[in-house]
Length: 205
Image 1 (cartoon, rainbow, N blue to C red):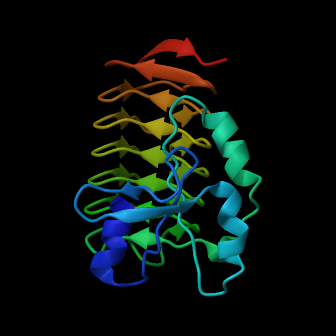
Image 2: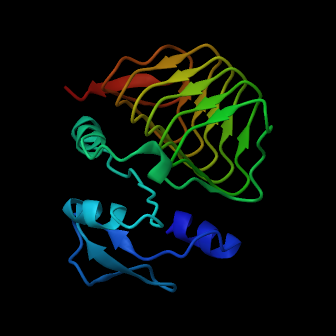
Image 3: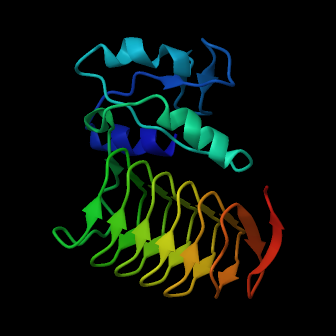
C-alpha cells in the first residue's frame, strides 16, 4: 500500500491491483483506498504478456526469508518489467549512486554518495544509507533505520525500525536486525540480533 500511495500521488502509473498468495482472489487490500486482489503469483505470466504492465514486489516475510527469496527469484521476471517506486521527498544524489530495479524508496529516505541499492530493496520512511554501502537484493530497511558507511547488507535482510548499523559491518544473508538494535559487529547469515549493543538471539537454521 505504501508503494501504491506513492505511485498514485505521482500519477506515474495506474495501479491495477495486487497478486497475493494468502488473500482470496477478489478480496480487497487497504482500509481507505482499496485495491482488488487480482490473482496469485502463478497468474503473473498472463500480466507480463501485456507489454504495458510493470510489477513491484513487496517482500514482507520475516520468518521464511530464504524460501520466499527462492520463490520470487524462480519467477524470472525480466529486470525491465520491475517498476521503481521513489517518493519525491527522498534524498538521492543523482549520478553518485546506483539503484536497481523494483526498488521502493519511501518519503524522506536518504542515500549518501557511492551507495548501491540492488534490485527489489525497500527503504521505508526516514531510513538512511551511508556512503559506500551496499544493499543486496530484497534488503528491507524499516522506518528510521540507519545504515552506516561501508556496510554490506546481505540478501533479504530485514533491518527493523530505529535500528542502527555501525560503519564497516557486514549483515549476512537472510538475517533480521530487531527494532532499535545497535549493531557493532558482523552478523552471521540466517541470524536474528536484538538489543543495544546487538546480541545474537538465535540462528534461524
